Amino acid sequence: MLQNKVIFLTGGADGIGWECARAYARNGALLCIADIKPLKQEQLAVLDGEGHLSVCCDLAREAEVQQAVQTAVREFGGLDAIHNNAAVTHPSKPLHTTSNEEWDLLMEVNVKSILYTTRYGLPHLRQPGGVFLMTSSLVGSIGQEHHAAYVATKGAVNALVKAMALDYAPLGIRVNAIGPAAIRTQALEAWSREQPDTTAIRDYLDQLQPLGAMPAGDVIADAAVFLLSNAARFITGCILPVSGGAELGYRSVSANHTKSFSK
Figure 1 (cartoon, rainbow, N blue to C red):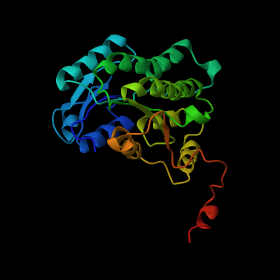
Figure 2: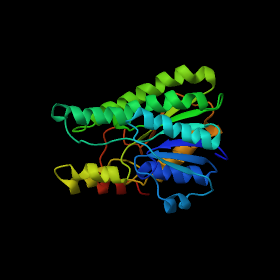
Figure 3: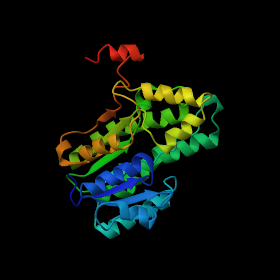
Figure 4: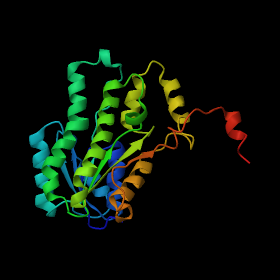
């Protein structure tokens, strides 16, 4: 679905980003993975195909983002897609206890990095046919307790998607986002450990999605492949929930209720 498409992917060294990288490569894409933790050569070797790049990049620093984009363009000659996936998830706390430094880092990495990748990537993005994709979060639409700054950044990402979709539609460039709920990643594990009762929060997360327990990041990667492909050629300004139905409303999560619909 992505044969020979050049994708600039931020935060692709682990978690959802790494699952997306694997899926993109499996579908024939060429990758430039920009992450503060560069991939090791053996990790790159796991990806299908050849010629993928890994660049060390602090997404909070404009000059590093500019250099990373330039490296990708110099290597591949242009870009077909920019996937803004990198994000900071900490701290897990209400707004009044969030420090200035914590707030600033979240905003720099989760939101302002999109400004940087757009500023330096747009001139090299295929027109028409180029795509911006954001990894957002369901919490950006419905909120989440004890996670105010992070929620604010994902709400901002969702708003950016709609504004950018309108701005770049005349160029034939699509802009979309994916909104996961609970996905089994190192970042979510770290967030769970910050909660007062780690076991209870994990049980809660496993029951959050009507379709079942927390999945791995491959469910997000499959949706990302679709949104970057020509199959999604008339979709823009969309925040696609890949959430197992977590946002659908009140429900019973008891075992008896689940079993009552099993036949």
